[in-house]
Image (tube, rainbow, N blue to C red; front, side, top):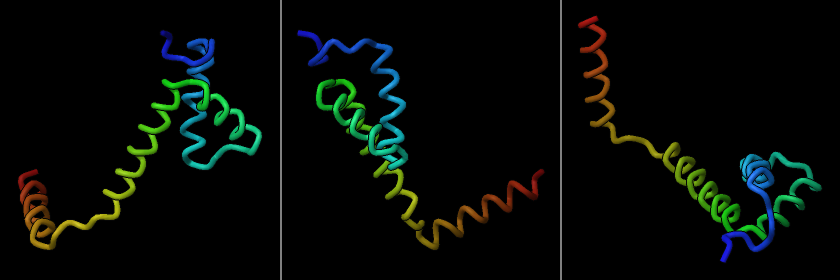
Length: 87
């Protein structure tokens, strides 16, 4: 069985893969959103890519909000100063 539920070409899917990033970032107009969502409903590989991209974006966003413990930051600053002194 084909991984696609429909007869999308590789080129068509490549175009939608670029649009997926814009969809996740809420950077598409309403008409484009509807078109991409319609494609995702009929294309399993693109839907899987969409899900993976959303997960990656959420993990990166969460990681950027975390703060390193003070002692770790202090050790890193000592290392940076040591490297600057060696240069």
